[in-house]
Length: 221
Image 1 (tube, rainbow, N blue to C red):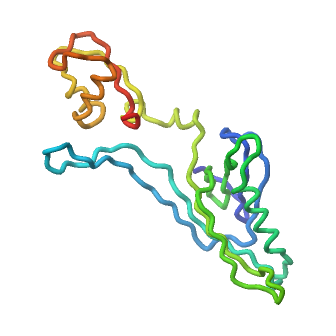
Image 2 (image 1 turned 90 degrees about the vertical axis):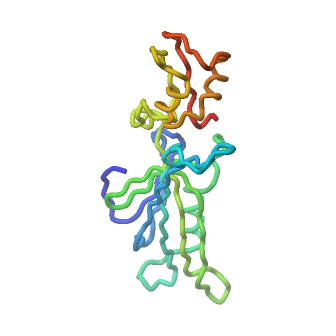
Image 3 (image 1 turned 135 degrees about the horizontal axis):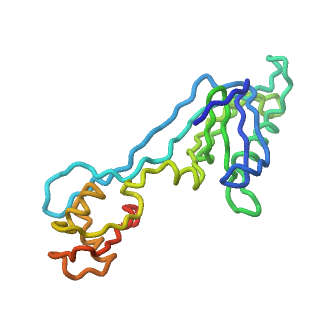
């Protein structure tokens, strides 16, 4: 998130993950009263057969989720005449509908005050609460959750090169064992069988000094 400034909440849509090609935007009629950001750590709490419970092994920081709601009012009480179904369609066209050529929803940028949140839509719940005699919606509330998105080149520059979710190549030094090297990289020695398999190692007791060993990312296990 970076600093930005705008009077009303704005959702910008882009066709590309680099956010260069803007395809549309949706502006909220009213700003939300609040928003929630969910932070989640993904861990592996699986214990090996015959072992007691151990501390969960860190896997990764999951993308943040931003949840907010905003109201669309077509009663005219605010002095602004709004066609509520049309406004809902505008939101869906920007945030939900597939791009014909990409076969996926658009990349979004949520802009409100000091908040700029790059994301894709996760869920949208539209509650219709007031109708005219013909059954046309006069008031609706959209509750939407957006999953944070970071461009590939930016994410690569932000990630720590020593993180266990990245690929590593290490050279064996005197005294190194495969479980010990796995512990240093992954924080857990239990992955040494997978590493041995990835490197076609048959002798797990002795490692030749100077041997280069590939340690795959945890997500591939």
